[in-house]
Length: 58
Image 1 (cartoon, rainbow, N blue to C red):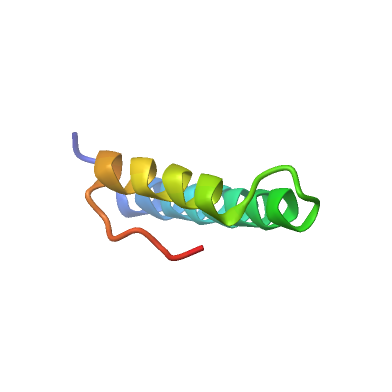
Image 2 (cartoon, rainbow, N blue to C red):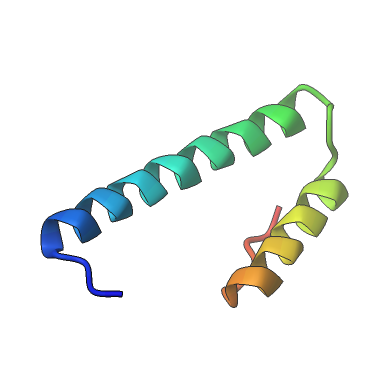
């Protein structure tokens, strides 16, 4: 699929926003005791497997 640069820029900005939002949500879940570091790491590893990226350490 070919996207013009404006569409790519828009999609990239949306992805960055969603990633930042997810990061803040995970930090909040940890800070409020809803999830522990082991649980957050499991989420991170599952995402890593699906995306092919290196998991961050919680």
